[in-house]
Image 1 (cartoon, rainbow, N blue to C red):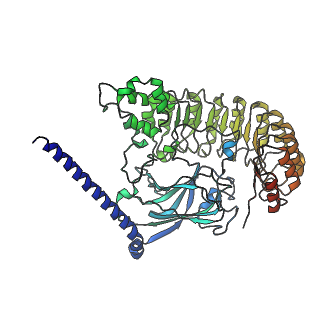
Image 2: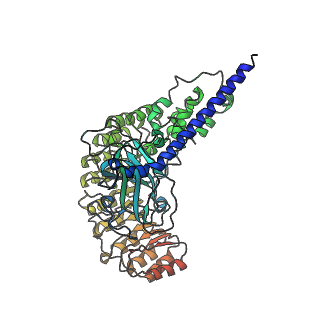
Length: 621
């Protein structure tokens, strides 16, 4: 008789599992039926008609091709109705990000990637857009007018940017995501991804892009949000997505192991005690550490809950030498930093790019973390971290004496006086100030005290009054400089170029794109070619005065050249380009878009003679 009870227990469990599976299947069927009936019902009901809105305003973005003082190729072109669509081609009235392809990853200025980055996080840039009215999204349409296919994620935020009072809670939900895919056509299209439904109304969307597979710059014209004022009658589980469980399956329930519960994952109080750990007790400590190095941060958090031995390994500061928190920007908070803090005392590389915005990270929370974990820091990435203020930079300068790499790209809310503290970081080798409000006095102080600089980015720094003075100081103080980005610097002349070229003989990369005050007739470009023979990347984008003589000087002196952009010049013909391609055997990228003497036939002939070089020729329909 006793054996009957175990059998009954097994049968009961089996019956329970069948019932639960049936209920789950029915629920899914109801969800599908709701999806099928939602659109016709909502359109039929006048009380819940679908609203269609174009973006009202662009509130944040990581980069753009355009200038801070104009509308050409800027992210601000995404606001309002389409300017170009359905036309295809290269138009100044569209929104364009700063980079495309893998060219920027192959430059001397490229940084090494962080370890432990989740494979599903591949976003490179983003733009955030607001709309007039909050709705429950039913569709999002992106009007792409040139080289489409860069958008890989669309997210919605619960916060209303136009609300007079700050929200008690800010949530981001993924509406749609996909890995980067190659789109062979460069023609315009209306991108209509199938989005998930969410449980809150929104008027703030975020588009994240990856341009690594594109043949040229992607151009976006407008974003359209479709939605209902009233909440559709769908189960909340249809929209349940953990921002940080990037590898979660939609059919599986969340296991609550995102960054928002990071503080619970390392608690050892609930760990069961076992007499031994089996074969793990026989493995060398270093071997277990090596195995754990392959886990993402959320997986490390999960593993810490299994037993005391693995909890000890997962909490070892050696696991956090490289800490990339950018993929978890939507959930990372002061609480997360507080519970990571004891494990990050040896951190050397820290990536907090995109994090902390809208109050997620406070100045005091960031300062507490750096005061404990900043001493060993060598690299600190803070791109688009808008919580930063002068106090934060002061803490960095005091707590991070060994810092060599600082990225403040697009931290455009930092006040100009904050940059005075950067001059205290005398060990800096790489400094990125792209799209910041750094002023001339602070920058001169930085250049004076940070003489070890090898990589410097000053692109789109509009607060600098005299770039010739800056170039002269760079030439005098930064003898080890290898890469320099002066993209869209507004007033550099041949005098600044002369000082720069005579002092920085090690330069391998120089971006002078859209520096319209430089004139070839002064001999500045020929001087660059003579004095900087190690150049591998040279961008002279949109300088109308570049001529055949300049190209021939480059061919004769800069034979290591790999990337050259002369977009927009009217003074260069196919003959000098052929000479350049014949001399520079390593040349892989040549942009001759809008070069009036180089037509499509000339490009085809050059491509046939030099098949290993990607020759770019943009067009306007």
